[in-house]
Amino acid sequence: MSQILFDNEAIQLLERNPYVKRVSQKEITYSDEFKEKFMKEYEDGKFPAQIFRDAGFDVGMLGRDRIKSFKKRCKKMSVREAGFTDTRKTNSGRPTTREFSLEEQLERLKHKIKYLEQENEFLKKIEFLDRQAEWKEERKQPRKKNSGSSKK
Image (cartoon, rainbow, N blue to C red):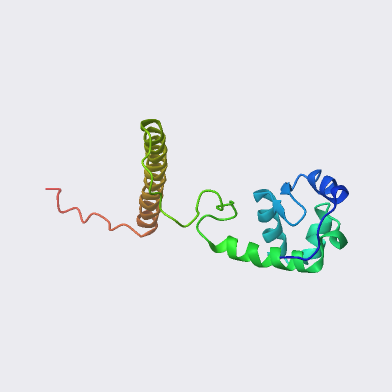
């Protein structure tokens, strides 16, 4: 974590930036949109400090270490399954041990159904595209001409 602490003025300035979700004296939570934008531009060859400048951040106020650690975190996030979404609240690493109320169970099951329906639609689309690609490949191959043996 960076040693730079933000005063109230710096916090207010950072809160006005559209790429900031939350800010405290010690930390900044950036939007998922900024994380994606950062990685895209970084992979295109832009320097991290320049990306922050272009996004409206004061690089001197943030500090070199904070930008460097953000770059490292973004690289890790870009390869994980959850992507750039913030999983700190939803994934504490511990399984839930408490009993859920009927309403909570219903909400969880509704969410699971919706997820599975989306997964099924995705798999149907992939299957369709595979069949379509096979069909196109078959049409490219030359057809055998009928020998006329059926005519008498």
